[in-house]
Image (cartoon, rainbow, N blue to C red; front, side, top):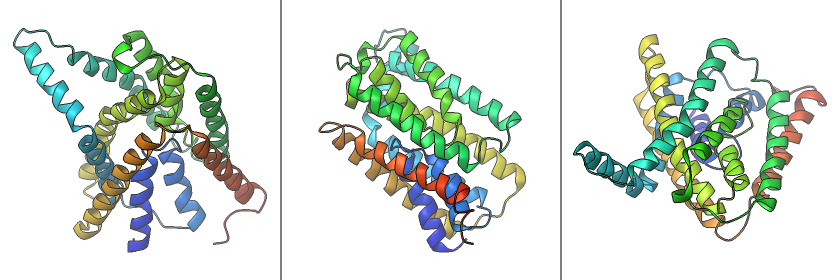
Amino acid sequence: MPNIDILVLAILQGATEFLPVSSSGHLLMAPQLYCWGAQSPALELAALLGALVAVMVCFAGDLIGMAQGFLKVLQGKRDGRVRLIGLLLVAAIPYLAAAFLVECYAGDALHGPLVVGNALVWFGLLLYGTDRLGLTVRRIEHMTFGQALTIGLLQCCAVIPGASGTGITMTTGRVLGYERPEAVRFAFLLSIPILIAIAGYKGWLVFDAGSAIDFPQTALAFGLSAVAGFLAIAFLSYWVRRSGFLPFVLYRIALGAYLLYVFYVAGGPAC
């Protein structure tokens, strides 16, 4: 794969993984729009790992706190920080189960531009509506396991490319009355167990297939994705303390409309 394609792939993975604009939708549609060849599984894995490292670095304090709390519990002591681990697992498991079922039984049925374009538009409008109407009274420490399960069940919709897992978590968080920065923070934290599980699965596929690995290219994809992910997390964390999700919603609507126009009005990309 040419370096320019690696650059686009890595930046898309790192940035859109955390912005509420759908990484899966971008990663599916970019090769179709620009007529790229098949992407290397090793490069996809490297870009995914770069995004994972970015969010783990940004939330290292939370991760260290949860690890310390877990060790105290193993010693027979109580520690409230372990509760966050339970909330994240309860919210992550439904999506991972749904993603596994879709991977096994749906194949590429959801990968068409009609699905992606519509999901970008309608889930974007849902994010805007709930953000405007949602209450702002709760923080993550107020979250119950029932609310975490609700987030996890609704995040199953993220198996639809274009829906956006982080976007759905933010949408649900606003519906449940969480402050915008808190809904965003929980979405970022929730991405950690999900990305770990997906990276483990993709890593096993790469190993099982015995795929050749171009180490300079994979290192480039990893590094660019990590930087893009870090910048996306920092930007969104800053932005939502001062404004809402409208710019991302407008972007989603514009991109969704563009995809529908290119593939269903203009007759497809000019490749």
